[in-house]
Every structure is written in C-alpha cells, then in structure tokens.
Image 1 (cartoon, rainbow, N blue to C red):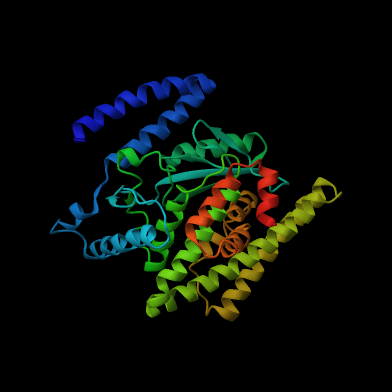
Image 2 (image 1 turned 180 degrees about the vertical axis):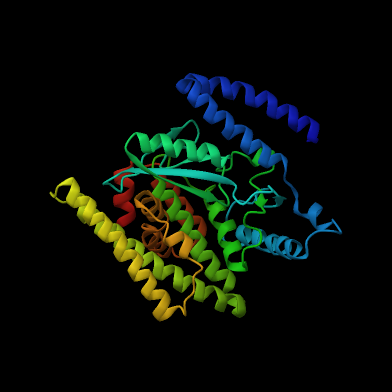
Length: 355
C-alpha cells in the first residue's frame, strides 16, 4: 500500500471511529479518544522500516548498532519464543521526545485499589494514557480534586494489542532503542507478548504474563552471551531487591488500610511505611550497592498508586512461570493455556492460575 493510499485509509477509518466514540460518553470522551487516535496515528506514520534507517549514511552509530541488534531480537522472538511473526518492531521512529506516552494512575488516599477506565477495544484498565504530558497532568489535578491520589509517569512503549498490524505494527522507538541489550530484548518480548493474550478486565494478569515472557525469553537469549549476561545479572539483582522492598511496603500498607484504625491512624501508618521504604532503600545502596544512585529518582518518588501499578507487573509472575513449566516449557501450549485463562471470569481466572 502506498503512503498516499494508507493516509486516505486512515482518514476513512478514523471518521466513523470517532463518531462511534462520541456515543460512548460525550465531548470529554471524544476529546480523549481523539488525542489517543491522532497520537497513535502520528507515531505510526513517523516510522520507517529498519532497513531504510540502516541505509542512511549519517545514521548515529549507536542507533545503527541497536537497530541491527533489534533485527536479531525480533527474529528470535518469533522463531524461538513463538511470539507473533508480523511487522511489529521491524520499523523505527524517532519521536523527538523522551516518552511514547504519559500514563496516569490513581488510588483513594487510603487504598491500593487502582481506579479503572474502560475503553472500546481493550476493555478496562488501571491507567489512562496521554500523548501530551500536559494533558496527563491536567487529569491528575482533576483526580486530586476528587479526593484521589494520582501518579503520572512516562512510558517508553505501549502495545496496540495487534490492532496496528495493518498499519505496519507497533514500531521501535527512540525512547528505548538505546537500552542495553538485555533491556532492549525485554522491551520487545514484553510488548509482543501483549499481542498473544489479553484479558479485558485484568491489568495484573496482562502485565505479569508479559513480564514472565520477557524474563524467560531474556534468560534464554543471554545464555550464550556471557558478557551481556553478567551485566544484566547485576542489574536484575538490584531490581529484584527493589521489588522485594516494594512488595513488603504494599503488604504493610494493605495491613494498615484494612485495619479498624481511624483514618488519621491509617495516614500515620502509611507515612511510616513509606519512611521505612526510603530508609531500607538507602541502607541497601550504602551496604550492598556501593552507593549506586540509578534508581533514586524512581524509588524516592513513589506513592500509593505507583506502588499499586508496579505490583501489576510483578505479583503474578511466579504463577505464570510455574504455568510455563507445567506446560512442559512449550511456548505454544503455554500461550494456548494463557489465552484460555484470559477468557474466564476474573475470579475464576485468578483461582486457576494460582492452582
């Protein structure tokens, strides 16, 4: 399809889609879906095949090296991990910004229950994404006025769940292309996993599944790359230590929030939990990390909704790893079982996964 034909097809498809969205919630919803659609189409239109970029003589040498690596990772994802073999992550776009989108998450002041938003295609999720950080911060202010505690964070990539494959698929982006080898592999494997299985009402199920795929996949990818494996193991150990701290803090907060204490006592308990998190983190840096500060900005800026959304990416990972092993470490069998679980009601799905 030529660029001109593709552009007209986008216009023809976008118009009825926006009209349909108008009926879903009035002007505010139309405005949100409008920015989502236009933002995604702009991102897709800016992408070109990786080989076209590699043909440019003035391409940044580091980007060239990473794009070459991405081709190997992308082929490995389909040939060895049996992830979808389509055009996703075979094109690249330089967005001239540091994040692909900015997500907003929110919880009540004394709860770890994420607020959810529902969407026409992907169902309900515990976050709302914007292509303009100003729009994300505006929503955060509105949520704060409603008595909720918001958190805004930049996201290097997102998955369109395969809906963009007819446009060339989800592209590689400048927001993550310079990642170290293992991190780049994780990003590609994780986002492709979202095209395999998706439960419309279960953020933790979806993200933990994709995280399990990336962890298993990267372990296999690095098996014959000792230098990259050594670098990644140190980084992963430190990230795992952080995850232990975050899980402990979430558990402590759950105990506080579920108690029969007064709201003021719960606020004091919440403040104590975050103070302990910061103190424990500083102790780990001092005693085991030789003062490594790479995680400071992220860890020290965490609040309740940030902890809640982080748990979505990790809490069910051990269950998925066990499920992979029960399926004989066979990727197609594993994916088929996850797809089956994704179709079940949420409570039944979680019970079977845990079993």
